[in-house]
Image (cartoon, rainbow, N blue to C red; front, side, top):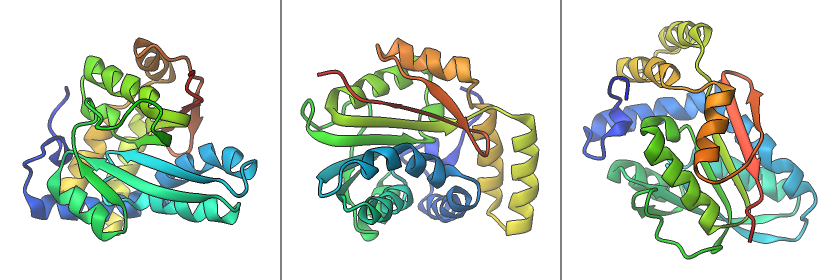
Length: 223
């Protein structure tokens, strides 16, 4: 792995974790992280009025993306029960405070039965791990999901690195967020690399580019 980020470490300083989670909520809103995941699932919501589903967000942070999905689903008459999974205790606590049923566990050993959750999402999580670990996580997502899996991560981009650095100064983000945001983009993927990673998990899914420096893959698990 390239470098080290605060959110790589389950034992990270709680104050730094809280600062990064606060900043990540803003970054997700302003720079497309939330929108990329919501747009991936809107077609499913649009054709499923009246459904009542469970949604698991692996690496949920403070739960901002699943909460946005809850609102988006409700606009189409779909009710989501939100579950979050985190390796970092401070983040799991933040997700619980936001209203998710958050589990403290490792994404490589999901404590859920096969096909026990309707939708599994993982946003900006996989780049924290070596490829062999990330592929094992993806296989686990495919195992537990019934209806859909959505993976969203970062596309490696020098322009995005520079833009994030400058935006972090303008927005007054914590210095640790500035460092880790640029490092996350360095750890990001090309379209081909992301597709290859998914393929290593035994899954075939198209990878699409989304603004800003985002990659998204969505698929329906095969029973």
